[in-house]
Every structure is written in structure tokens, then in C-alpha cells.
Image (tube, rainbow, N blue to C red):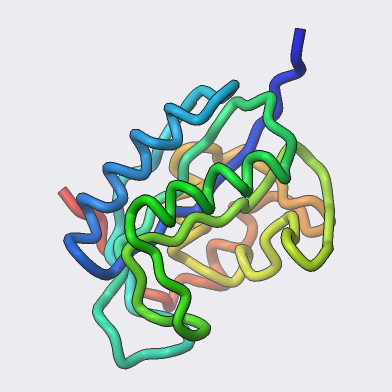
Length: 162
């Protein structure tokens, strides 16, 4: 029997009906092979980070139980992004969909293709707030309890949708 791993995925979009893009992506996450969608946060509106001259984002975090390896999971996420029209034009550009591996069990990994835990997740309210909503007990390897960083991002405005 394959071992199930606990993975958290950040979802974001700000083009072509972002809430619908996220809803389609959540559905697609649940259809990945050897993977079950465990939970998904509410959707939140947030201001763009980095490149500010673009529409606000809609963000969420999903929890998966998967027997895919981190690399297989990343390939599945890239395929979902591609199917939803993701084009990589420049860093922090507007996008139809962005899917990032935040956490995968308690591993730490850094290579050219994948960094786990996501290197800036503890600095971003649009990741921490939805993550805390579905997994208040989760630990960021090497940093500690994710909820411990909520106070540091309190000035970043998020608005729950729906």
C-alpha cells in the first residue's frame, strides 16, 4: 500500500473570473491520481504582491492526502495551471491560475524546481490566513507553528468572498 502524505497547496488567480478559476482548480486537485482533496479554505480577495499594477487576486489553500511524490505532485499542478491557460510572462505577472506546493509532510527541500516549505509563505497573509482556517495545527518546518506568524501579516488586508 502506498503511503499517504499531507500536502498543502496555495491557489491564486486574478484573470478570467478568478473565483471560477479557483473553483475549477479545486475540483482538478481532487481528480489528481492517488490524491484526495481533504479540505479547502474559503476564497479570499487580496491585493497583488510585487507587481502592483494588476487586478486583485483571489486566493485559497487546499489540503491534499496524496501518495504522489513531491515531483509528481508539482507536475500535476503545472498541468492544471496549463489546462486553465496559465502563461508565464514575467515574475508576479497577472495569471489565470497559480498553484504552489506550500508544505509536503514535514520535509524541507530546495532545488531548481521545487522549494518546500514555500520560502515566503510565512510572510503572506493570503497564504497564512486560509492555511490557519483549515489546519490551525500545521507547522512550517524550520520555522514553527504557522499561526504564530499571523500577527506579522496582520497589516496585509484580506477579504473573505461569499
